[in-house]
Image 1 (cartoon, rainbow, N blue to C red):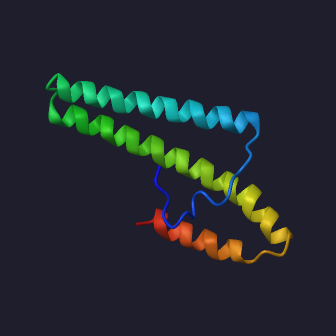
Image 2: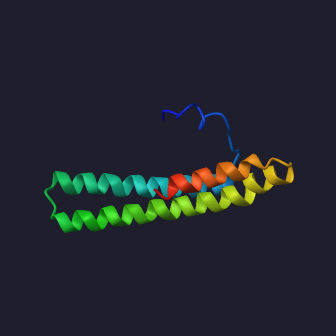
Length: 101
């Protein structure tokens, strides 16, 4: 993955095993859905059938984002605020603006 101004690579997050496994499981399911759509296109499936599956992937990604954002706020953001780092609020607002495009 290419980083924009190396911002996404400058910080890391050590996740608990449960959170890590849940994220990987969700991403594997999404990846399988994408492969399924590719197969549908290769097999000349009807457009609306493909669109419905794309919508399901979109929903799965939104769910993934909501869960990740919630975890981020409850861990990273809270910890930084407790440490007196108020810049994390600006970072969160910037992230939310990017997500709402």
